[in-house]
Image (cartoon, rainbow, N blue to C red):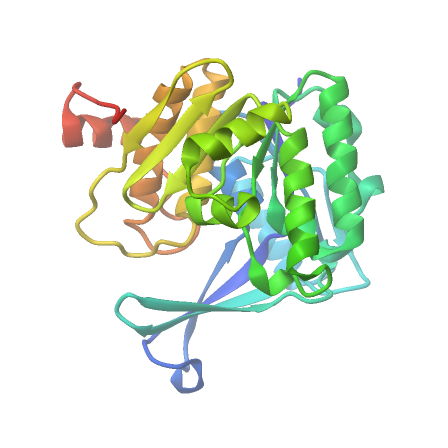
Length: 325
């Protein structure tokens, strides 16, 4: 039986500073891990869905650590390959001062950047309900881009919904340049069924901050569902020929770690779609997932179970709910 959601991309080992201040003064680190696609896969697994993550990791202890941890979170890692030609990527999280987090990546030439179309298991993609992709993978290397377009082709040929989160990383655009990266992102988005950018990302891609205008541009290329995240304020949703509106974000008193919130949100939207909820209901559920993620440290530690999401929503609003139109 195939997975509900198949995804692929780079996951790295995270070394999080144990004390605040510039990294030069930090002596201790907590070892965690994170990667946009595996974060979404873990989020879906915690919400009760079958998820599968493909990738390449280094043939090293960090690679073994990633496979062990992600498998332990309930994700199928059977199609992750160990690669002897390059190391597993790393990144460091620095806490300069309260509210000022910085991230330094050491991923250039990592094992995941050698992922290619031959590393895809097309049978798993063809039998899934959703293929989830991010723009990070598209910027890692030419072979990763080719793998993305091949995966989309397989998904489309088999009636699998294609989900795309641009998840822009300007530091990865060096090879393509900003205009080249923009064109690649727009090309991928035009082939997707569901596109979930942040408002700033959508404005960079399409030159306007008008959410309905962005949605219509995507609908013209064949996209069916659009969700645009606007930070901690609200999320806009629209369906081709259907409803549109704004879902207010949940208020959080203390943000512990905002990194990973977008991946939790994406997992919530995909969970709602798998359960055949309306897009409005899926985004409302996703807003709760994202709020819970930012209340905990690390990329995946705050990803909630279904019961935790339900209890959080009930605590915040009872059964009232609401959409800003």
